[in-house]
Length: 599
Image (tube, rainbow, N blue to C red; front, side, top):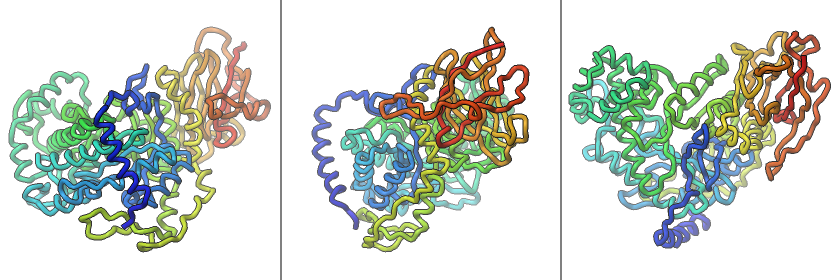
């Protein structure tokens, strides 16, 4: 087994820290938390707003300590500040009540040394709707820890959300982990927790086990009905339609209140998953109250994903049943077709709940970069975390690199080999990251966003920030911000009036830093300005600079842009000057402009 000196040392250190912490345990404002600041709810880390820019390495990766360290280094090199790192229930509680925290200890220590933060992804009862991350002692005791049943009494490898034994066991494990993190994580590496992963029932519209059938035939819980009545005017219209079609009853069984059919099954499962998750999350928060969230497939509409997930049309059910859940975070895997409208629609749907917005699994590349810019700029997201980074993780797993043996906690049958890696005991050195990966779209997006993160966070709270995302189906957008309208468009061959360049995604994030001054960042967009207040009707560029922010946060101009660098077209319309801004990754990714007006 691989238990390095640094991991063993972390265990010893943890015991000493635990004893000291248990004596004082002061209220610590530096503990990560969500806080309303002005017009935005932001993630606060070490007492200051923090913008998450990260990705999730392969699920099994953290079970190998050398792989874990390497991937955190990869993420730092590609301008990420946060890793979404999985911790499986089976890894930390291989025997009931006996905990092994070597993997989270190494995760925290590596993150501290490399300067990264961690979103801990708790693979407890469910991962992708299945219970394959639960310990063997849970899986093997079906009488004590009952499973879901689908169709004609077919038992599946998924713990039933209706079982108190199940949620209590999961909650105890998460509580033990959070207590340990509270004791050892003195520099607040772990900033949030994703509770489970993509929960929801597959193969049927609801659980049809004996436990579930009894609950389905019983009255709808009064606390849910009270919530729906109290918030009736605020509910999602799709949920209201289902309730209305059944007569807006305020009591009765699930089918009496919501009618017969798969939509009622989905509401039933949403409530029971929500109750389960809130029990688990509350158990963890009692030990260490950092933000906790759930993720779900980014699908839209009834019956289009695993039944019971916190999709936007049943989020009111989740809000009633899971007060310990701080955010509902959609996965966002997208293709090029209609990507701009898809990003706008998805982020709008999942900000409707009033909870902070965060994407925890998503497409990388140019699509991921566009999603990050739009969500952070327009929806005041607390950050963006994709699944991998522009193929870098896939490259790593396909190179045939040999790594030392994975950590095999006591009680596990054998080390699980990672795909593409050699056997235990290999000493082959890890290769450097290919330089082309730092130049790819998502790395460049994170580099740009990290440069302006303090400004983003300030303007999120002020409400003086906006964003746009464009593609060949949506080539232009007018963005009202401050005293001007920003006319945002895709690059054209031969000027704005010409045909858009095909298959290009354009995205930009804009901040009004003064009455006539803007800070702009993005890629593949052109911007001109139209006055939106009384006065002379034409806006021109008084000053235009490309540059960066240094480590102290001071703006450093690298280019003073004039002439061809400022000209959009030499045949402007009567209300335009013909000058504007071209944003492109590299030297033109971040620009400051001052405007003047004339007639």
